[in-house]
Amino acid sequence: MTSIRNLLFSVCLLSPIAAVSAAGTLLPAQQTEFDSQYQQGESLYSAKRFAEAIKCFQRALAIKSDPNVLYNIAQSHKKLEHHREAKEYF
Image 1: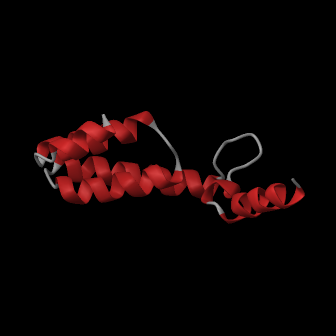
Image 2: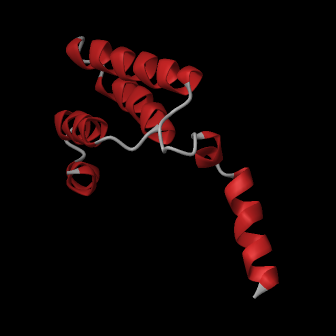
């Protein structure tokens, strides 16, 4: 049991989620990066550069799970007629 606990603890330390504060909120630098990637994704989406928007939205999603990001990724895939991927994100 102790070895399983140690393994889980090690995984948590190596995980990007480990940088999140104990309250479950992002650190200020993470929030800034999330906002930057999200806003860049929105700008690219508005410019109809959907493949590039997806990359930004996915970088934002790697920082924080957010339903708006998932929706925007799905919409971008839909615009590119990537129906299977769009369905996964919807």
